[in-house]
Length: 346
Image (tube, rainbow, N blue to C red):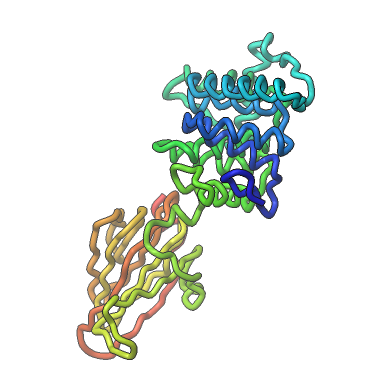
């Protein structure tokens, strides 16, 4: 279904959730012109007034007070306009002042529990005790104590806002994981990211595949899966001017490694391999030598008969182009033992 200029459809997310996320995205961008009709669509689509108030007030912690207050001002104007037209919007359940607002130790304790659940483990920001306290006591204590939005909806709203801001990719990645920890499925979070992108709402593409890099990811590398730990993808590359049936001097491919994915130790006989790193961060290691961290623009020349492995770093996708150059004699790949967790750089 298309409402205005936004397509409201999903497999598992509700229309109400998508409307909330659209409003969160536009609040984060400070786009009040588009926010006005989005608020109207949300109210018509089942979002209550108090849910919108809760979403906009929560987002001040992520997008700043000015945008939060501007969004609340837009909501107030829309409500006054609709009331003048005789439209009675659903206020939702009554707002109740959270008890933790009057009990600082309780807010700190409750917020610490919420933060631990969201991050999946205890988190202490010892580098800056002030921010550590603000996060636990205020954001995850005071703000998350409101009962207008469920924990799962709060995180969807946060993901939508962060995906609409540039320069906050680490926080976006953390809250995508947090959205799952707070009750959403991974499929729902990816669905939200695709929906935001398809409707021109996100400033960065927060879908997992987008983190792979700009080169085509291709298909799952099932033919060689037994020689890899983790998932890889293969995309053959042909010169653009190659005629049908015309031979090429060398074959090229883009190999995409998901985080922590690496191939087994192996040796190229009769050819040396060239790796051209194009996106993400990876590792290359020759037997008996220290690992080399790989970044875009690096070129690795792997001599024939040298035992080695390559793959992604633990917290990054990695893509490289690869080709082989014959050195004489029969050509083959000799696949050897896996790269153990002890060998893999942590």
